[in-house]
Image (cartoon, rainbow, N blue to C red; front, top):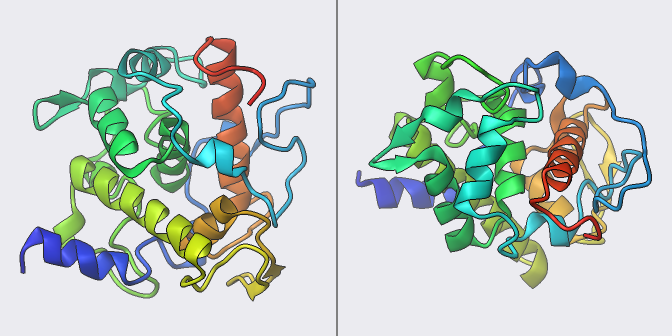
Length: 243
């Protein structure tokens, strides 16, 4: 089956990591430390709210981060190191170029894609190149609940494209009312908890990963990592501090 057809299958099914052990995601201890609230207007609440993980304005691409800024984000990462992604290239593009291109194409914020990748596989925080297995499943895309990962989505470029398309698909499905996860509609997660997304971004994130997992992973981890990444980007001058 051609890649485009397989991608359609992925977009029509659950493609994020499904079991609770893998839903815990990142193996970076710092990702589980909550930064104190210093009053900065970073657009993500200082206290986790399962019904509003991130805002729509943070989720969508507004052209706030250029290729050069994402490259600098890798060179001076939120973890105080130079991420291996600063020197990684795929299909003739740097990781920063590939990420911004897909972010622009799908209308998903680069910072959201960076956070999503860190939550799934911890790639951003690694100084040394991780295993190929980890790279090949960067976004946990093509890894439906209860099944092995689909080899058709193996590799950084395919993972990046698939992950961004899925996030966009479920955002739009909340907007038009066709998604299982929608704004202002209560639904049970796999924890299980009852969540009522207050915005389309939160609905998309739960469609991607239907777990809350406070202090352990899931969308709690998405919230915490996204907040860390935004604060770092603001400190570097990549994002306005009023978002």
